[in-house]
Amino acid sequence: MSASSDLRGKTILLPVIDTHFRILGEGTLDIKTPAQSALTVEADAILIFLFEGEPALPEPVSALDTALNGAIRELLELGDFSGKSGQSQVILTRGALPAKRLILVGMGKRDKYTPDSLRRAAGTGVRKSHEVKAAQIGVVFYEYIEGISTTEAAHLIVEGALLGRYEYRGQKSGEAPAGTGLPNNLQFLTENPAFEAELQAGTNIGLAFAAGAIMARDLVNLPPNICTPAYLAQHAREMAESAGLRCDVLEEQQMRALKMGAVLAVSQGSDTPPRFIVLEHNAQLGADADTLVLVGKGVTFDTGGYSLKPADGMVGMKADMAGAAAVIGAMGTIAALKIPLHVVGVVPAVDNMISGHAYRPQEVITASNGKTIEIISTDAEGRLILADALVYARRFNPAAVVDIATLTGACVVALGKAAAGLFSIEEGLRDVLLKAADQTAERLWPMPVYADYEKLIESDTADMKNSSGARFAGASVGAVFLRNFVDYPAWAHIDMAGMMQDLDGISYVPAKGASGYGARLLAEFARQWAQASAQSR
Ligand code: BES
Ligand code: ZN
Ligand code: ZN
Image 1: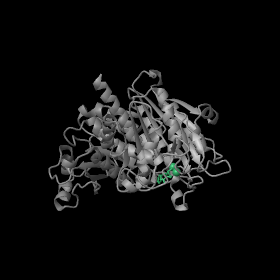
Image 2 (image 1 turned 90 degrees about the vertical axis):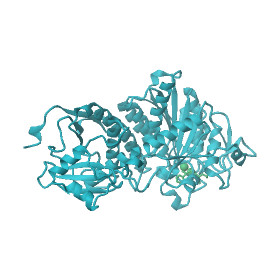
Image 3 (image 1 turned 135 degrees about the vertical axis):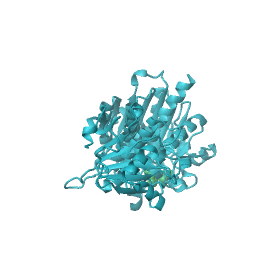
Image 4 (image 1 turned 120 degrees about the horizontal axis):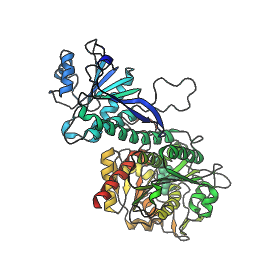
């Protein structure tokens, strides 16, 4: 009996978006329900997600076990496979099923379930499939755990699979390695037609989240001679076009007209001109609508300027635009999800360089709200470009503004690669962000914004200094500096310096290179904010 002749019912092919939110056509990622069963599908690998320490197999898995003469149960009994998170076990079917292999993947303990249990299982499964050169992948779908909807489960699996499969090709010459990019084919396997609509909806949500994070990774991974401020702007423009966002890009002259003295001071040492990128979702709703503004630090390379970084500290600084990448990626996701809010992404993009034109310590500059800043360190440039961006955000009359930046080494010292720092005194906003962080597993840890720190940046000659010049509370000092440019009901600052790249131990995040941190977090934040404001209406 061939699988295809057994295909009853309909096959739903989804339009698939690429990482620029362009429609790729149909069928790269397809869901076949209701007739496609794990027993009949001709896949290279069938992924089976199982909780740890549960010998009783769920129904569709037990049918596969029977077909294989009890091979799954025996592996569990012998202890070869326990279901621990990160564990996988290949079983060759050797003709017992049309599919070539089963891959058991651990989800960890049921009582420890979080959204990452499924996301990581999908990441692990897809990586293992790639290792054994399986291109056509099926995922046995069943009700994994009570309280998680089919839509949510499908979303998490698709997201984890796409992010786990990510590879950055870079500029290596010669042929591209085979099979990079999106998984060739992934389908959910179920015989229950009731799952159909939700699997489809969840797949689209998972695609939207993954595409935003993948876009962020690509932008961060690009070298600084390619990913310049102009490149970021052009990329944002093209993405906006396909995602249906409004995009305005300010050039140097317009920034001068707006008196953005802080962005311009940082940028003036570089031969590469700055850009100020504004992306708008639901622009037609205007300033009266519930509005969120997301601001991302876009330093495409940070040499430190005249407060020059040591050679070792400079490597890695192509990622100093990871906040910008997170905002641009999130805006794509927000557009794809059609979040019912007015959301604006603001990205000041500059290079921090040295030349005869570069700004120097002890200069006093004026930001676009008229406040003056004495430069102590030209390496504290992120807060300067964010200052003008935070002022610019005011014009949208936002209910809340969130900025995200690779702002301080001090935050890396405090939290390592375990979490980004969250700085906000608005409890409501903080709670929504923390909830979003739980959902996307992009950790945030609350840090203080005490007024005490303001003393540390009092200047003798200007309204403030851009650095205390000492090492105490460096991350919080950055936050209180930014507060001078904030004028709306709620504001939060995220210092993601530790999270931009080289995160270890997550199956769907590369151990080397960009993490994509922040893109999913900010999109989920907007989603939750929209939900909360719908409920309060
Ligand atoms: N881009 C850096 C912060 C950074 C450091 C990000 C390490 C990722 C990894 C930022 O512009 C910077 O240099 N900050 C200074 C601030 C100081 C001069 C007040 C720092 O952290 O030393
Ligand atoms: Zn710097
Ligand atoms: Zn920087």
